[in-house]
Image 1 (cartoon, rainbow, N blue to C red):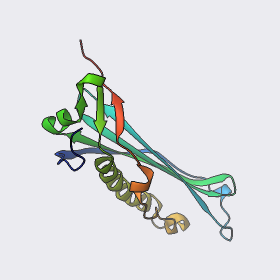
Image 2 (image 1 turned 135 degrees about the horizontal axis):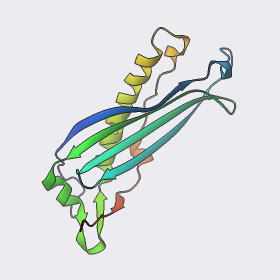
Image 3 (image 1 turned 90 degrees about the vertical axis):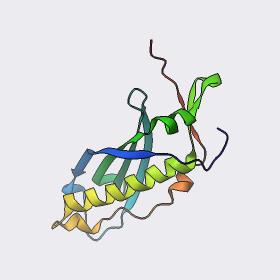
Image 4 (image 1 turned 90 degrees about the horizontal axis):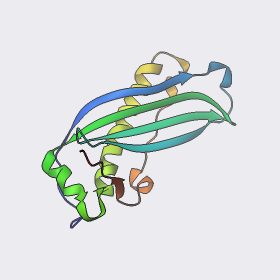
Length: 149
């Protein structure tokens, strides 16, 4: 990849709630809570899409009382996709700044989905916090190319 600050043309193609659960019996209102976070990127080579899967677990002790995972799917315009291709290594290398941008969009989306699902319940006070996704994505991400026959 020649430049770090390349322009990437993309559109959001879909949003999916992958997981959602409330375990009321694991929650005690007067206890402190913790938060676990998971971030994954998945590729759909054929459709030139990147899926961002973001999950949160709200915990008390080691018990999860609220869990959500949302995925956002982004279609990358063909010329932008082709800029990611490293033919010599048979890799698709996506810049960390672009992945951080997609992760930030997914974070906001997850925040909204969580609010919609917990609205008018005691769990609506649990909000996905602001995250510095740049700290979570420290380097460009390389994916193996799938060669179609």
